[in-house]
Image (cartoon, rainbow, N blue to C red; front, side, top):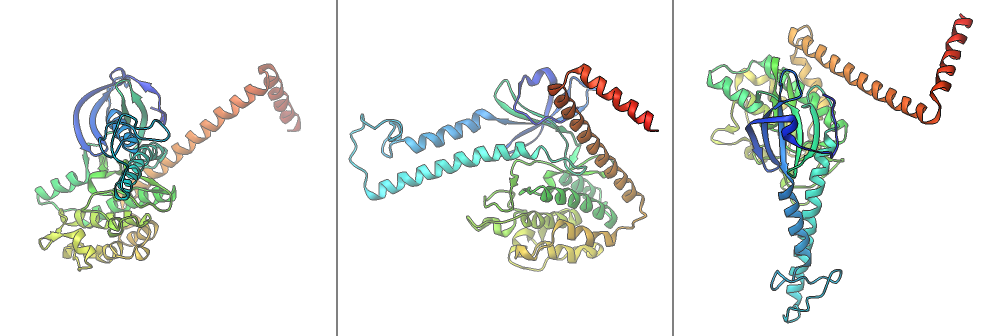
Length: 384
């Protein structure tokens, strides 16, 4: 299935059979579905966001910019109409300030809601072995924004949880391979000038042969800096809570540090307290002795000063010291990565060929093209 990033309108039921809900969040619900056009009825993940709810929030934000502070019913806007039917007294200075603040807050809500949706749509262009593949996106006939992606049987949180339930902790090699793949995906995301802003075990999927993929770009931001207070509290970097202060992609590194602790321990609690809160208070957090090789890396990732945290590339270089270059898992992963990059290159070449052909057809007649091509081939043969 070719990846499509568009806002076309289609009936979901014609293409997909929704089986059950497998996840939910502030940005919508995720369902397991069958692709009815696939001969094998392959499973896909179908994420849907209620446009009616989003449009309702936008409508309310617009109304709040135009409503009378007293009755919240009649409009009072110099750009629309005066509040002639309302016999209220003139606004006091305090009331005028309240109205202005309410309108400003409403405008902010409107901007954030639209930007969030546009950012998620723009993030669909991200293509990497360690980022979940988006097959298509569209608006359904019942007013839902739909994103279709590949389906994974479990996320990293459930994967680690099940391993600890059967008292089978992850080996250092397994942790290294998981971390390497997350870092590769994160390095690519940051190189494309995106900030994920919600890195956590719930947003990392585990596929066959422990292939790891980052998912859920509902909170993604584009650009070097942003300032929205979003993400999961248990994994959120301290600078995100500083109000309107700008922060950069170092917040993803902090969140990955807390995620690393979870992978090693199966918990986000250390000595009865939240690891994230302890890290923000600059308390020492120790990994189990059997995973002590990751201790220094963890401490680097949860530095209070974002400037002191390493980049994904730097962390990857340090991590490779723990991985045997001749290990079969690493070789298999590298082969898959190379295959993915090769396929992506082929797609780009194919699309460029299609564009070239359309441009030729636009400016030249078919007979002229054939004659020119034949003449060119004859010249090559003559020269040989």
